[in-house]
Image (cartoon, rainbow, N blue to C red; front, side):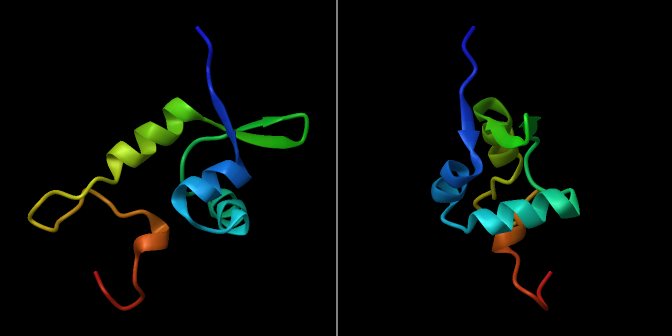
Length: 76
């Protein structure tokens, strides 16, 4: 089995956010699971997809939980 890995720059592009945001999420212990290999951070594609699956909104507008970058201050 071949496991696909994404560098933080590629994941940031996938989600249209800054790589620094992913760095902050790691520091805050939020976001998808990651691997640190020789000082390099990578994300397994299966972990990214699992994280995305957890964040899916239903058609009623409610969510299980929202991605941190989609949260708006002052709203619940």
